[in-house]
Image 1 (cartoon, rainbow, N blue to C red):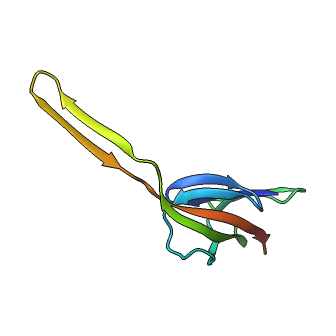
Image 2 (cartoon, rainbow, N blue to C red; image 1 turned 180 degrees about the horizontal axis):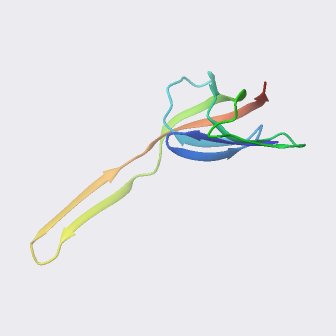
Amino acid sequence: MYAIIETGGKQYKVSPGEIVRVERLAGEPGQELTMEKVLVLNDGTSLHVGRPYVSGAQVVARVVEQGRGKKIRVFKKKRRKGYHKTQGHRQEFTGLKIVEIRLQ
């Protein structure tokens, strides 16, 4: 059984028991979240494809961690002009453990 969900402008293929890192969501570790933006749901016997979302489908996930990813360097330069600039960025994420996939 698996589902394809949409969160944070991205799509993720998830299955029960899996841990995924998604864009930052509000919630404390241990809290359960219900996501209803399910694009595709495969329950083992049939494939449900949404237009754009599958009606009655939900993915229940538990927040495992809130954190920030590795730092990346952003370097800008204009040649022959003496201009250069360095910035750093750390993307915030939420670690989710998929508890259950439901179709009502």
